[in-house]
Amino acid sequence: MKTKRLVFIGVGGQGNLLASRLLGEAALSMNIPAVVSEIHGMAQRGG
Image (cartoon, rainbow, N blue to C red; front, side, top):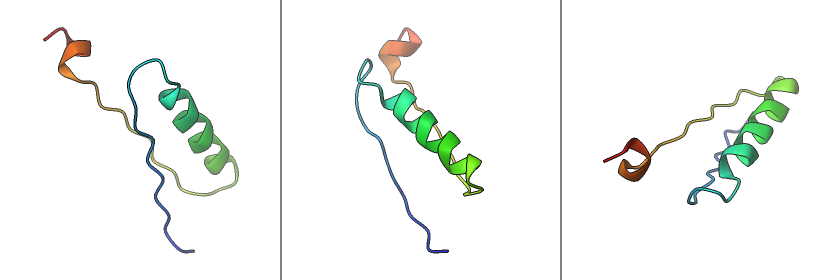
């Protein structure tokens, strides 16, 4: 199987986490390997 990458980029409140989780879970349910990650900026960390 050919490797594909899909990247969701945006700021808080745009539904990026929900979209990436839904896509990741859908892929896993079809036995397709998936990795979901999130990065929080300094504003969300209290910095």
